[in-house]
Length: 341
Image 1: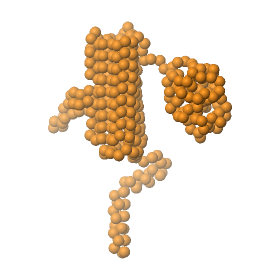
Image 2 (image 1 turned 45 degrees about the vertical axis):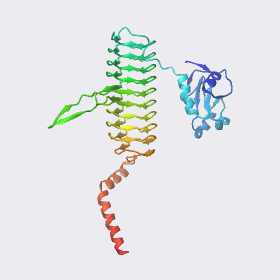
Image 3 (image 1 turned 60 degrees about the vertical axis):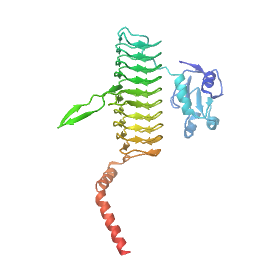
Image 4 (image 1 turned 90 degrees about the vertical axis):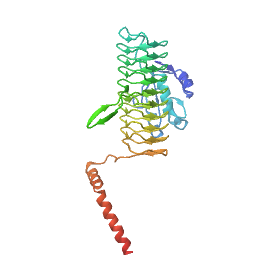
Protein backbone atom coordinates (compact mmCIF):
# COMPACT_ATOMS: atom_id res chain seq x y z
CA UNK A 1 0.00 0.00 0.00
CA UNK A 2 1.53 3.33 -1.05
CA UNK A 3 -0.75 5.71 0.91
CA UNK A 4 -3.76 5.73 3.23
CA UNK A 5 -6.01 8.25 4.99
CA UNK A 6 -5.16 8.64 8.66
CA UNK A 7 -8.75 7.80 9.65
CA UNK A 8 -8.60 4.57 7.65
CA UNK A 9 -5.24 3.73 9.18
CA UNK A 10 -6.66 4.31 12.66
CA UNK A 11 -9.54 1.95 11.92
CA UNK A 12 -7.27 -0.81 10.66
CA UNK A 13 -4.96 -0.46 13.66
CA UNK A 14 -7.82 -0.20 16.17
CA UNK A 15 -6.36 3.15 17.29
CA UNK A 16 -8.06 6.24 18.71
CA UNK A 17 -7.79 9.12 16.24
CA UNK A 18 -6.96 12.65 17.41
CA UNK A 19 -6.84 15.34 14.72
CA UNK A 20 -7.57 15.48 11.00
CA UNK A 21 -8.53 12.06 9.67
CA UNK A 22 -8.23 13.21 6.05
CA UNK A 23 -4.44 13.53 6.28
CA UNK A 24 -2.87 11.18 3.73
CA UNK A 25 -0.05 9.04 5.09
CA UNK A 26 2.44 7.78 2.52
CA UNK A 27 5.21 6.40 4.71
CA UNK A 28 6.76 5.79 8.13
CA UNK A 29 9.93 7.38 9.48
CA UNK A 30 11.77 7.97 12.74
CA UNK A 31 10.90 10.95 14.89
CA UNK A 32 14.12 12.65 13.82
CA UNK A 33 13.67 12.25 10.06
CA UNK A 34 9.90 12.16 9.48
CA UNK A 35 8.45 14.89 7.24
CA UNK A 36 5.04 15.96 5.96
CA UNK A 37 2.99 12.99 4.74
CA UNK A 38 4.78 10.56 7.03
CA UNK A 39 3.81 9.04 10.36
CA UNK A 40 6.15 8.27 13.24
CA UNK A 41 5.80 6.66 16.68
CA UNK A 42 6.87 7.29 20.27
CA UNK A 43 7.59 4.02 22.03
CA UNK A 44 9.50 5.45 25.02
CA UNK A 45 8.16 8.35 27.08
CA UNK A 46 11.72 9.52 27.81
CA UNK A 47 11.73 11.05 24.32
CA UNK A 48 8.37 12.82 24.56
CA UNK A 49 10.03 16.27 24.47
CA UNK A 50 10.86 15.56 20.81
CA UNK A 51 7.14 15.73 20.03
CA UNK A 52 7.35 19.53 20.10
CA UNK A 53 9.73 19.69 17.12
CA UNK A 54 8.81 16.76 14.87
CA UNK A 55 7.84 17.41 11.25
CA UNK A 56 5.68 14.28 10.83
CA UNK A 57 2.01 14.62 9.92
CA UNK A 58 0.98 12.20 12.67
CA UNK A 59 2.36 10.24 15.62
CA UNK A 60 1.47 6.90 17.20
CA UNK A 61 1.70 7.16 20.99
CA UNK A 62 0.04 6.28 24.28
CA UNK A 63 -2.65 8.25 26.12
CA UNK A 64 -0.02 9.33 28.67
CA UNK A 65 2.03 11.09 26.00
CA UNK A 66 -0.84 12.69 24.09
CA UNK A 67 -0.75 16.08 25.86
CA UNK A 68 2.79 16.71 24.55
CA UNK A 69 1.78 16.07 20.94
CA UNK A 70 1.32 19.05 18.57
CA UNK A 71 0.21 17.04 15.51
CA UNK A 72 -2.48 14.53 14.64
CA UNK A 73 -2.13 11.35 16.68
CA UNK A 74 -3.16 7.73 16.91
CA UNK A 75 -3.47 6.66 20.54
CA UNK A 76 -2.77 3.00 21.29
CA UNK A 77 -1.64 0.87 24.23
CA UNK A 78 1.57 -0.44 22.58
CA UNK A 79 3.10 1.99 20.04
CA UNK A 80 5.95 -0.34 19.05
CA UNK A 81 3.61 -3.23 18.29
CA UNK A 82 1.35 -0.84 16.38
CA UNK A 83 4.40 0.38 14.43
CA UNK A 84 5.05 -3.22 13.35
CA UNK A 85 1.48 -3.65 12.13
CA UNK A 86 1.48 -0.22 10.50
CA UNK A 87 4.70 -1.08 8.67
CA UNK A 88 3.01 -4.18 7.27
CA UNK A 89 0.14 -2.09 5.95
CA UNK A 90 2.48 0.46 4.33
CA UNK A 91 5.12 -2.02 3.19
CA UNK A 92 6.33 -1.33 -0.35
CA UNK A 93 8.83 -4.21 -0.54
CA UNK A 94 8.44 -5.91 -3.95
CA UNK A 95 7.73 -9.61 -4.27
CA UNK A 96 10.76 -11.87 -4.88
CA UNK A 97 9.24 -12.81 -8.24
CA UNK A 98 6.26 -12.11 -10.47
CA UNK A 99 4.66 -14.84 -12.61
CA UNK A 100 6.78 -17.66 -14.09
CA UNK A 101 10.02 -16.43 -15.65
CA UNK A 102 10.83 -17.90 -19.08
CA UNK A 103 14.27 -18.95 -17.86
CA UNK A 104 12.94 -20.89 -14.85
CA UNK A 105 13.50 -24.66 -15.08
CA UNK A 106 10.49 -26.54 -13.69
CA UNK A 107 10.30 -30.34 -13.81
CA UNK A 108 7.26 -31.81 -15.52
CA UNK A 109 6.28 -33.71 -12.36
CA UNK A 110 6.39 -30.65 -10.11
CA UNK A 111 2.98 -29.54 -8.81
CA UNK A 112 2.32 -25.81 -8.65
CA UNK A 113 -0.70 -24.33 -6.89
CA UNK A 114 -2.63 -21.27 -7.95
CA UNK A 115 -0.88 -17.93 -8.35
CA UNK A 116 2.65 -19.34 -7.93
CA UNK A 117 5.57 -17.15 -9.05
CA UNK A 118 9.02 -18.45 -10.00
CA UNK A 119 11.89 -16.06 -10.74
CA UNK A 120 14.56 -16.09 -13.42
CA UNK A 121 16.94 -19.08 -13.51
CA UNK A 122 15.25 -20.81 -10.59
CA UNK A 123 15.25 -24.62 -10.64
CA UNK A 124 12.28 -26.64 -9.38
CA UNK A 125 13.10 -30.36 -9.43
CA UNK A 126 10.88 -33.41 -9.86
CA UNK A 127 8.17 -34.18 -7.33
CA UNK A 128 8.21 -30.72 -5.78
CA UNK A 129 4.89 -29.37 -4.50
CA UNK A 130 4.37 -25.62 -4.22
CA UNK A 131 1.17 -24.43 -2.52
CA UNK A 132 -1.01 -21.52 -3.62
CA UNK A 133 0.63 -18.08 -3.67
CA UNK A 134 4.15 -19.44 -3.16
CA UNK A 135 6.90 -17.14 -4.48
CA UNK A 136 10.30 -18.52 -5.49
CA UNK A 137 12.93 -15.84 -6.13
CA UNK A 138 15.49 -15.68 -8.91
CA UNK A 139 18.26 -18.26 -8.83
CA UNK A 140 16.65 -20.46 -6.17
CA UNK A 141 17.05 -24.24 -6.15
CA UNK A 142 14.25 -26.44 -4.80
CA UNK A 143 15.26 -30.10 -4.59
CA UNK A 144 13.33 -33.26 -5.37
CA UNK A 145 10.17 -34.11 -3.43
CA UNK A 146 10.28 -30.88 -1.40
CA UNK A 147 6.96 -29.39 -0.25
CA UNK A 148 6.45 -25.68 0.37
CA UNK A 149 3.18 -24.52 1.90
CA UNK A 150 0.76 -21.82 0.86
CA UNK A 151 1.97 -18.23 0.88
CA UNK A 152 5.62 -18.94 1.63
CA UNK A 153 8.27 -16.80 -0.06
CA UNK A 154 11.90 -17.46 -0.93
CA UNK A 155 14.13 -14.55 -1.83
CA UNK A 156 16.84 -14.88 -4.48
CA UNK A 157 19.44 -17.65 -4.37
CA UNK A 158 17.94 -19.75 -1.60
CA UNK A 159 18.90 -23.44 -1.75
CA UNK A 160 16.39 -26.02 -0.54
CA UNK A 161 17.68 -29.59 -0.72
CA UNK A 162 15.60 -32.71 -1.42
CA UNK A 163 12.57 -33.88 0.59
CA UNK A 164 12.35 -30.76 2.77
CA UNK A 165 9.02 -29.69 4.26
CA UNK A 166 8.29 -25.98 4.68
CA UNK A 167 4.99 -24.81 6.12
CA UNK A 168 2.65 -21.98 5.24
CA UNK A 169 3.43 -18.25 5.24
CA UNK A 170 7.17 -18.67 5.75
CA UNK A 171 9.77 -16.14 4.63
CA UNK A 172 13.30 -17.23 3.75
CA UNK A 173 15.93 -14.61 2.95
CA UNK A 174 18.64 -14.80 0.29
CA UNK A 175 21.58 -17.14 0.58
CA UNK A 176 19.97 -19.50 3.09
CA UNK A 177 20.64 -23.23 2.72
CA UNK A 178 18.14 -25.73 4.13
CA UNK A 179 18.77 -29.45 4.15
CA UNK A 180 22.52 -29.71 3.57
CA UNK A 181 24.24 -32.68 5.19
CA UNK A 182 24.85 -32.51 8.90
CA UNK A 183 28.41 -32.89 10.19
CA UNK A 184 28.34 -36.67 10.61
CA UNK A 185 31.47 -38.83 10.40
CA UNK A 186 32.93 -41.96 11.96
CA UNK A 187 36.68 -42.35 12.50
CA UNK A 188 38.51 -45.34 11.07
CA UNK A 189 42.07 -45.27 12.44
CA UNK A 190 42.51 -41.57 11.71
CA UNK A 191 40.44 -41.46 8.52
CA UNK A 192 37.03 -39.82 8.46
CA UNK A 193 34.20 -41.97 7.08
CA UNK A 194 31.17 -39.95 6.00
CA UNK A 195 27.77 -40.90 7.43
CA UNK A 196 25.01 -40.19 4.89
CA UNK A 197 22.38 -37.92 6.42
CA UNK A 198 19.09 -39.75 5.89
CA UNK A 199 16.70 -37.46 7.75
CA UNK A 200 15.21 -34.21 6.52
CA UNK A 201 14.20 -30.75 7.76
CA UNK A 202 10.61 -29.99 8.75
CA UNK A 203 9.75 -26.30 9.16
CA UNK A 204 6.43 -25.18 10.61
CA UNK A 205 4.14 -22.30 9.65
CA UNK A 206 4.97 -18.57 9.87
CA UNK A 207 8.70 -19.19 10.20
CA UNK A 208 11.16 -16.49 9.11
CA UNK A 209 14.79 -17.33 8.37
CA UNK A 210 17.45 -14.67 7.81
CA UNK A 211 20.04 -14.37 5.06
CA UNK A 212 22.85 -16.92 4.78
CA UNK A 213 21.58 -19.13 7.60
CA UNK A 214 22.10 -22.90 7.31
CA UNK A 215 19.79 -25.57 8.68
CA UNK A 216 21.21 -29.09 8.31
CA UNK A 217 19.13 -32.16 7.62
CA UNK A 218 18.88 -34.86 10.27
CA UNK A 219 21.15 -37.88 10.42
CA UNK A 220 18.35 -40.40 10.98
CA UNK A 221 15.52 -38.42 12.60
CA UNK A 222 14.57 -34.95 11.36
CA UNK A 223 15.68 -31.43 12.17
CA UNK A 224 12.52 -29.66 13.39
CA UNK A 225 11.71 -25.93 13.42
CA UNK A 226 8.41 -25.12 15.13
CA UNK A 227 5.64 -22.71 14.21
CA UNK A 228 6.33 -18.99 14.51
CA UNK A 229 10.10 -19.36 14.95
CA UNK A 230 12.25 -16.43 13.81
CA UNK A 231 15.93 -16.99 12.98
CA UNK A 232 18.28 -14.13 12.10
CA UNK A 233 21.14 -13.99 9.59
CA UNK A 234 24.18 -16.28 9.46
CA UNK A 235 23.07 -18.84 12.01
CA UNK A 236 24.17 -22.49 11.99
CA UNK A 237 21.48 -25.00 13.00
CA UNK A 238 23.06 -28.46 13.06
CA UNK A 239 21.49 -31.83 12.33
CA UNK A 240 18.62 -33.05 14.50
CA UNK A 241 18.21 -29.75 16.32
CA UNK A 242 14.64 -29.13 17.53
CA UNK A 243 13.47 -25.54 18.07
CA UNK A 244 10.11 -25.03 19.78
CA UNK A 245 7.29 -22.74 18.69
CA UNK A 246 7.79 -18.95 18.74
CA UNK A 247 11.44 -19.04 19.74
CA UNK A 248 13.65 -16.20 18.47
CA UNK A 249 17.29 -16.72 17.47
CA UNK A 250 19.49 -13.67 16.84
CA UNK A 251 22.32 -13.42 14.33
CA UNK A 252 25.46 -15.54 14.33
CA UNK A 253 24.18 -18.23 16.71
CA UNK A 254 25.72 -21.71 16.45
CA UNK A 255 23.72 -24.73 17.60
CA UNK A 256 25.38 -28.14 17.78
CA UNK A 257 23.62 -31.35 16.80
CA UNK A 258 20.71 -32.96 18.63
CA UNK A 259 20.03 -29.87 20.72
CA UNK A 260 16.44 -29.34 21.82
CA UNK A 261 15.26 -25.78 22.53
CA UNK A 262 11.83 -25.17 24.03
CA UNK A 263 9.08 -22.71 23.15
CA UNK A 264 9.16 -18.92 23.61
CA UNK A 265 12.93 -18.82 24.09
CA UNK A 266 15.18 -15.94 23.02
CA UNK A 267 18.76 -16.70 22.03
CA UNK A 268 21.07 -13.67 21.88
CA UNK A 269 23.45 -13.01 19.00
CA UNK A 270 26.74 -14.91 18.62
CA UNK A 271 25.76 -17.46 21.26
CA UNK A 272 27.18 -20.98 21.06
CA UNK A 273 25.06 -23.86 22.32
CA UNK A 274 26.29 -27.41 22.93
CA UNK A 275 24.46 -30.38 21.45
CA UNK A 276 22.78 -33.49 22.85
CA UNK A 277 20.99 -31.57 25.60
CA UNK A 278 17.78 -29.64 26.26
CA UNK A 279 16.83 -26.04 27.02
CA UNK A 280 13.37 -25.66 28.57
CA UNK A 281 10.62 -23.22 27.57
CA UNK A 282 10.88 -19.45 28.18
CA UNK A 283 14.65 -19.21 28.50
CA UNK A 284 16.58 -16.09 27.44
CA UNK A 285 20.28 -16.45 26.65
CA UNK A 286 21.95 -13.05 26.38
CA UNK A 287 24.37 -12.23 23.57
CA UNK A 288 27.57 -14.26 23.26
CA UNK A 289 26.28 -16.81 25.71
CA UNK A 290 28.17 -20.12 25.88
CA UNK A 291 25.66 -22.80 26.86
CA UNK A 292 27.45 -26.04 27.74
CA UNK A 293 24.90 -27.66 30.05
CA UNK A 294 21.12 -28.20 29.96
CA UNK A 295 18.86 -25.42 31.23
CA UNK A 296 15.88 -26.73 33.20
CA UNK A 297 14.39 -23.55 34.69
CA UNK A 298 12.93 -20.56 32.77
CA UNK A 299 14.83 -17.32 33.18
CA UNK A 300 17.63 -15.14 31.83
CA UNK A 301 21.12 -16.65 31.50
CA UNK A 302 24.40 -14.94 30.63
CA UNK A 303 28.09 -15.74 30.29
CA UNK A 304 31.27 -14.02 29.15
CA UNK A 305 32.86 -10.78 30.29
CA UNK A 306 31.34 -7.46 29.16
CA UNK A 307 33.62 -5.06 27.31
CA UNK A 308 36.15 -3.19 29.47
CA UNK A 309 38.95 -0.73 28.74
CA UNK A 310 41.96 -2.78 27.64
CA UNK A 311 44.00 -1.94 30.74
CA UNK A 312 41.18 -3.12 33.03
CA UNK A 313 40.54 -6.21 30.91
CA UNK A 314 44.22 -7.24 31.11
CA UNK A 315 44.02 -7.13 34.91
CA UNK A 316 40.78 -9.14 34.83
CA UNK A 317 42.35 -11.73 32.50
CA UNK A 318 45.40 -12.00 34.74
CA UNK A 319 43.16 -12.68 37.73
CA UNK A 320 41.21 -15.32 35.81
CA UNK A 321 44.42 -17.06 34.69
CA UNK A 322 45.59 -17.22 38.31
CA UNK A 323 42.27 -18.11 39.89
CA UNK A 324 43.41 -21.61 40.95
CA UNK A 325 46.41 -20.20 42.80
CA UNK A 326 44.26 -17.47 44.37
CA UNK A 327 41.73 -20.11 45.49
CA UNK A 328 44.47 -22.25 47.09
CA UNK A 329 45.87 -19.26 48.97
CA UNK A 330 42.39 -18.25 50.16
CA UNK A 331 41.68 -21.76 51.44
CA UNK A 332 45.03 -21.80 53.24
CA UNK A 333 44.19 -18.49 54.93
CA UNK A 334 40.75 -19.79 55.93
CA UNK A 335 42.32 -22.90 57.46
CA UNK A 336 44.84 -20.76 59.37
CA UNK A 337 42.14 -18.41 60.61
CA UNK A 338 40.05 -21.40 61.65
CA UNK A 339 42.89 -22.85 63.71
CA UNK A 340 43.62 -19.50 65.36
CA UNK A 341 39.97 -19.25 66.43
